[in-house]
Image (cartoon, rainbow, N blue to C red):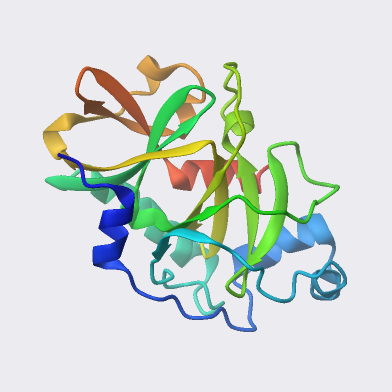
Length: 232
């Protein structure tokens, strides 16, 4: 039986460090694109220089290495790509299950920082529709992505009540979702990889399919999703 998300984090919780004063190369590229070259002053003007007040649903995980501006973009990209490639070799995989526009999806827990309740966001006027805003999360700037929009789901959308905070390429990114389903603990034999031809919608963002009972749950590629956000 899959343990609940709350139960998993209660057993695994580690408090994250506060973000430093430096920015990773990925953060600098994103902020320059949407806030201008003088983005540090823009962050102060928009109230993003100080951490926002957040309500964590699960507790927090320790932040990933490479969020302090010390590692270069090539190292960050190689690390995330290697992580997702390595998932195919593991015998057991833990995933966070969630719901968006009538679809149930999942993300590997290794790429999740924490889950927080939805909160007011600072809008970025120059950003595409699927980037709905940004916040300062424990000292790190984090763009917020509407998953239903970026994945082109056509089903009816409910209220986005939660944010799954992921870490990728030296940056945090929040994924807006309607609900949290469960913490899946899956055997490798229950996962089918390389399913792009079978998925259809947003197949470039799907890493594999998880069999849960009689249904199939799409596993998102956080690395591919983040690359799409950066190229928007």
